[in-house]
Length: 346
Image 1 (cartoon, rainbow, N blue to C red):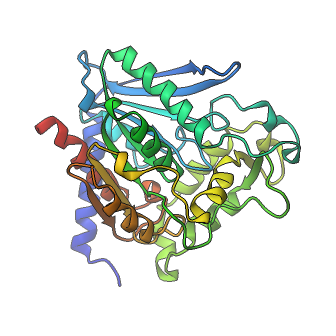
Image 2: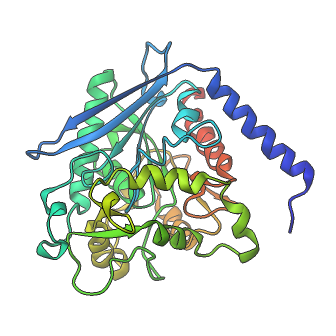
Image 3: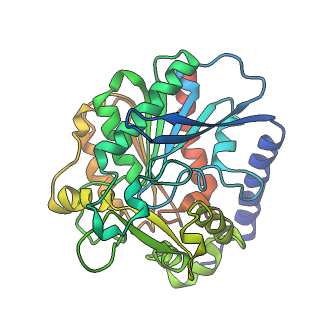
């Protein structure tokens, strides 16, 4: 079905309005490396906020973490159509942070990633990722002298943010799970290749595009990603791996801890965390064509959040696991923003 011209104009107008709001707000950007308790490990953190912001509140502070394969810094703060999602939130009066877990993006790569992947078992397991999140949360809370903040996780990051929230409910204001994972009934699209599972895996741009398009109807593929957006993301993402960038074809290295976790828990029918221990307002949001973490996962998880006040589940039309960088990304931005803004109105 083709979109009606009126609908197209509404979408274009919304995008223009959002971009204008960002352009009219002067944002301050800071980058920093936060030391982990583990020797030699530093976590990359980026902060954006309105230049005039001088007071910091829990309900107006946000921390975002990425998924299993790609860093936060090249997705959450990627300039597409004149703005990133990070810009969008910050321009609405928020103090916004992102982090790259160790082994990803601009954070320290463990020494195993400079060796043959077969020489070591999978690295950056769930407990390690949650430790990195906790380190950055404590850094932000101390930096802004606030007791809590909002958390946003994407994909594998939803498991880590949920685990952290279940363990530290007093430090979390609200929880956003974008493309949440749960007990798996279908095969994972994240594959490490044949043989024993090593420390990390190598992923090419071609593999990334193939995974991205899985589940998209053939007649919708051409218009899903606006011209130039995939290349903008891939160029930024693959550039974060100096070793992989020299290969032909280029690749990006990604820790395999997430795959080992999946095999030990989600694919084995076991939950990694207890949803009943999440006691803060929680939003589950995803797109209908998501085949990485299909809708049945969020729909199974939702009723298990028995102690989450004001929980809700939002399904977005005509998008995939990566709707953050697709033509309908404003659906995601608006749904999450409405949820975050509730705390300021209460």
